[in-house]
Length: 112
Image (cartoon, rainbow, N blue to C red):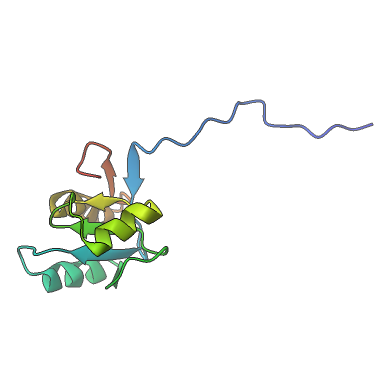
């Protein structure tokens, strides 16, 4: 009788202390931003990200001028468990993406 070998290492829950942004991810922007939102969107596309106008279950990240916003987009993102970040935190993630570091931000880096 043969027994299948199981992993001997206990499975640990995945910690959400770091969130990655990858080429092809769908991001959505909300709120009044400086520079203009269209510039943020153009920069996202240039980095290989897809830009959406509405939050859906396929959205990977919501960039909000005010991460504590109660806007419809922010509410939908919270409902779906989509991270909401301030533009400054997003900018850090975008720089990491451009550096080939799979842009990430720590949980204390502005994620809500």
